[in-house]
Structure formats: structure tokens, C-alpha cells
Length: 130
Image (cartoon, rainbow, N blue to C red; front, side, top):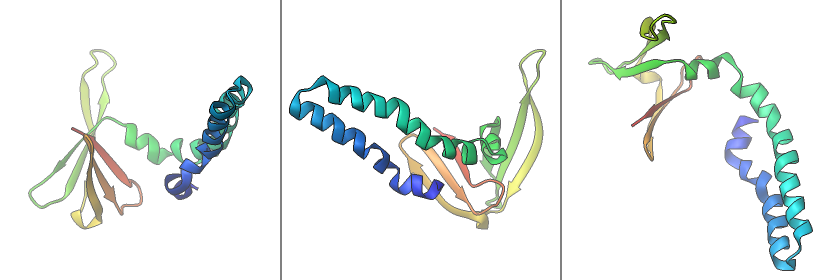
């Protein structure tokens, strides 16, 4: 389902665009109300399975953890995870994960973010903001 959402997710908004165009052509407020109803009712109901099956998984929570990413001299990707100290809000280093460079599918620079796409089963993407 996630692959479908990435490649054809824009199709969900095609009825919304059609109704907005109809509202503009007929200059009828009722079509605009239908468009808002579709946006606020139908789209969230369609996207709910995606949220529950992909965004709330342990893999996704791992992406949100505090970490630093570096590439060492042997071209391995080293991920250092951190936790916050509740007393003084400082960062405490915890686990270190080393991913060999041959597990890298692609490194893509999109706008102001670098995306490292991995073959590793436990982590698929690393997003590094510039």
C-alpha cells in the first residue's frame, strides 16, 4: 500500500480538483462545500490505514530518534543514537549502529535534505537535513 501511495497517491485528490473546477465553472458555492467536505472527511479516512500500518511501526519511531549520522574512513555509515537526560536536558549517547556501505541503494539530495536509501531490513531511509 505504501508503494501505491508514493506512486499514485495524487489520484486521491483528483475528485477534489474536479469539484473545485466545477465550483469555479458554475460559480456555485455548493460545489465548494462538497470539496471541503471531501477534503475533511474522505481523505483522512482513506489515509488512516497508511498511518496505522506504516507510520506507527517501530521502524518509523526509530527514524524519529535523536541521532547523528557520519561516514567513516572505511565508507561505513555510523549512526549514533542519543537520549535526553531529564534533569538537565543534555544528550546522552546510547547505541551505535554501523551499516556497511554496500547496503546503500542510493544517496539522493532533494532540496535541502540528503536521503540515504538502504537495503538494511531494520532501517530503510536516513534523512539528513542540511
